[in-house]
Image 1 (cartoon, rainbow, N blue to C red):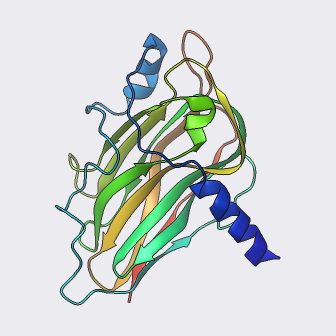
Image 2: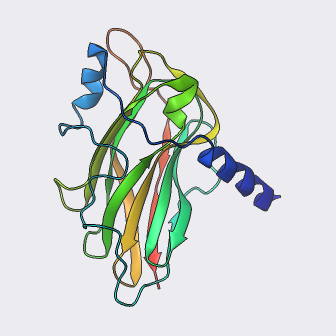
Length: 210
């Protein structure tokens, strides 16, 4: 039963993943962008290491989620894929109506983990929208600052679990390295200023290397 549910979730998350850019068109997004003061970057940018190159003797790395079966109105980090010491992690949003954008920060131990880049998700691209992805993983060591915002002023309803974006990490040495989510918010599209959607639960997890 749980295996089938996980397979359905993974198909849902990976469905429609694209790598697109976009420009913001509304002054209302200023509230969101106040959390991220760096220029928007395209998919896969902003890593703290140059390239994906593995360790001299690659570790076997994985991600353990705090909440592997997220409920409604939940942001949860889930493992996407692994390759030796490189792990891709979904940041998902589950069963939430009226979503315009989200902003948050991911904090990690830079001694044991390197951030490599990101890929666009499908959650906020519903209806052909081209969201603005602002992701900075290089200004502050051990911290990724992110905002994903729809650009036509409309909100979208998230049904089941969808990936907002996918983050890629390299585990540099054996051990367990927690990821934490800070300064976190999901916004509606109220005018003139989007407002936080109440009751959102947030779950991260930990990267491991053996």
